[in-house]
Structure formats: structure tokens, C-alpha cells
Amino acid sequence: MKLLITGGAGFIGSNFIHYWLEHHPEDQIVNLDVLTYAGNPANLADVANNPNYTFVKGDIRDAEIANKLVKAADIVVHFAAESHNDRAVLDPGIFVETNINGTFKLLEAARQNNKRFHHISTDEVFGHLPLDEGTFTEETPYAPRSAYSASKAASDHLVRAFNITYGLPVTITNCSNNYGPYQHPEKFISRMITNLIDGENIKIYGDGKYVRDWLHVQDHCRAIDLVLTSGKIGETYLVGGMTEDINNLTVAHFILQLMNLKEDRIEFVKDRLGHDRRYAVDWTKINKDLGWEPEHSFSKWLKETVEWYKNNESWWRPLKDEAEATYKKTGQ
Ligand code: NAD
Ligand code: TDX
Image 1 (spheres, helix red, strand yellow):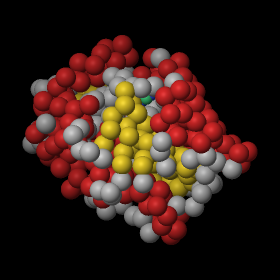
Image 2 (spheres, rainbow, N blue to C red; image 1 turned 120 degrees about the vertical axis):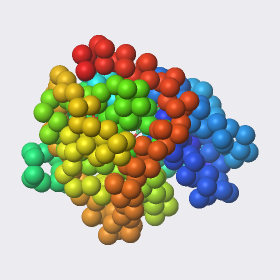
Image 3 (cartoon, rainbow, N blue to C red; image 1 turned 180 degrees about the vertical axis):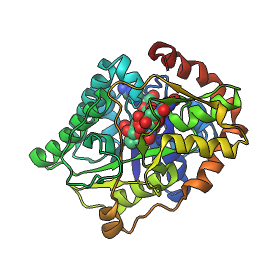
Image 4 (cartoon, protein in one colour; image 1 turned 60 degrees about the horizontal axis):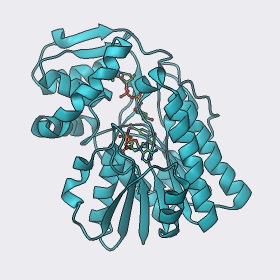
């Protein structure tokens, strides 16, 4: 099988390429990535010479390149996106461009060539939940509250519309917050660890009582694999982690413990505009239909993640200034 991966030089895409080459060594992978600030060829340096892996630098909004690569593939696995909420607050336009227009261009290419299309989306399309009440399911109505989640919601709707209107064979996964190796140091867990290594504080937005559902990126990759190989066409599957209602402050305390540091390294900063209070994902459907469940416990894999950042400073060091530049602008 030949897979066209978009956004494969980013965090989840590069983990997925590593995962796929290991678990499906007979398959061919083409990675289409324009290499924004978030795309990093270093994530894939170890597979760059693998004969089953090809990198193409290009934009998903470029219809010509999209059409050529989609035509040559059996399946499109679409990760490429602008993915960071704090950047969406500063500059929403590029989120509309990449996440909506880019997905549309790829869908058009898939339609012209009648190719299977798998779309990677987020639990944020459902908006947010009150503390200690409710979970997102596949039936939860869409209610995005940020330019990032609104652009991802729009892309999900387009994917479904292409299935209904043109019979395009699509599947969608909406997952919770991923963590693990190769995550840009702009995101919460990777920012905390790299700040602490640098002697800086952990920055907690608002009161810190915001809840995320943490999913190890390897569990996410396994879920996508199952949906690609056994998922039902036209269906959406929610993918969540093993954590239950752990708020940001608690995650910060875990990390301080793992790094033998004291609570005085926590600094409360300005809240994010429109900050979603709580996400919680009910992954019963993918469990019942495809037998998936998360296998990576948060405590063990948070420790592994801390170790990974400690051991891979040369990987994240060139990205750190870019990450912190955003926060200079937001005052966080
Ligand atoms: P990321 O920001 O780390 O990587 C995005 C990648 O897309 C980069 O390599 C970038 O260069 C590429 N890209 C951006 N615009 C492009 C364009 N126009 N053409 C080609 N390539 C382009 O993102 P991530 O965290 O790996 O997220 C991957 C996907 O998963 C996204 O669709 C995101 O919405 C979704 N998602 C992420 C999380 C998470 O916790 N990180 C959770 C839920 C869903
Ligand atoms: O320094 C920080 N301090 C802080 O308190 C940062 C960077 C974040 N936070 C808070 C904001 C959120 O409540 O931590 C939580 C997680 O923040 P992010 O890592 O920015 O993730 P989030 O906004 O929840 O979105 C992530 O998960 C869903 C991904 O970035 C999205 O791409 C995905 O769709």
C-alpha cells in the first residue's frame, strides 16, 4: 500500500511515520509537508534514507502538487494543520487558510482520483465541558470556540460533505491532547519541561484548573492504524487517553516531582483568551467496534517524556526561541 501523509514533519505525523514504517515495513510512505515553523525534518532524520520513505516539500493548498501525489497514492492520511491555540489567538487567518482551504484542496484531489481519505481532527470541535460533568461522544453537537477549533470543525464538515455528496470513502478521528517525543516546545507539557531545564518557571494560565484528556502519541498512532485497516467508511471515531480529569496544575506538580523541583517554580500568568475549561473523551465506540484502548499510563509515560526532553536537548533547542516568541506577544 502507498500512503500519502500530509504534515508528516510535525509532532503526530512524524510519530505516525515512525510507527507505520515499523509496523507495516512493506508499505510506501510519501510525506507532503511545507515545513512551517512546526515542521521539522530532524523528526525524520533516522528514516530519511529508508527506501520506503519519500519527502516532498510542498503546500497542501497547491492543487497541482496535491493532485499529482494523491493520484499516485492508495490512501491519504491528513495531519497537516496549524495546530496551536495561542497562535490562533494572534493570527487566525492562517488557520482558515491551512485548515479549511488546505483540507478542501486535498479533498478535491481525493475526489478527482477517488481515493480513501482519513482526516485527523480534534476533540476541540465539540467546544468545552463544565468541570466534573459530561464527556464528548461521536454524537456531541459541534460547538467550537476558537479560530483553531472552528477551522478544524469546518474541515470535518467538508470531509463529511464529500462523503455524502460524492461518495468519497472517508474516515475521521477526533482525538484529545497528545503528548510524547517530538512535540514542539510551544505546547503545555513540552514547554513546562524545557522551561524547567532552562531554569525558567512553569507558566500556568489563569487559575490552572483547566482539564485536558492526555493521550500518548503512540496510542493515537495505533488508533489511526486500526481505523485505516478496519474502520467503517463514513464513520467518525473519538480517541482519548487514560487520564481522568487531571487539571493543568496537577500535571505541573507531577512534572516538578519527576524533575525533583519545588512548587516555587510555578508562575501564574495571564489566561488564554476564550480558554476552554475542560475536555473529556468517551472512547467507547472505537473500543467496541475496533478493540482499541489506550495502553500508555500517564504517570509512566509522562516520566518517559521528561527523560526524552532531557536526552534530546539538541532537538528542541533550535525551536525554543520560536516557541517563546509567541508568548512574548501574548504576555504569557
Ligand atoms: P504540528 O503543528 O506539530 O504539525 C503540523 C505539520 O503540518 C507541520 O509539519 C507543518 O509544517 C505542516 N503544515 C502546516 N501547514 C501546511 C501546509 N499548508 N501544507 C503542508 N504542510 C503543512 O501538529 P500536530 O500536533 O502534529 O497535529 C497534527 C494534526 O493532529 C493536526 O491536524 C491537529 O489539528 C491534530 N490534533 C493534534 C492534537 C495535539 O495534541 N497535538 C490533538 C488533536 C488533534
Ligand atoms: O504554557 C502554558 N501554560 C498553560 O497553562 C501552555 C502552553 C498551555 N497552558 C494550558 C492551556 C491548556 O489548558 O495548558 C493546556 C494545554 O494547552 P496546549 O498544549 O496549548 O493544548 P490545547 O490548547 O489544549 O490544544 C491541544 O490539544 C488539542 C493541541 O495544541 C491542539 O492541536 C489539539 O487539537
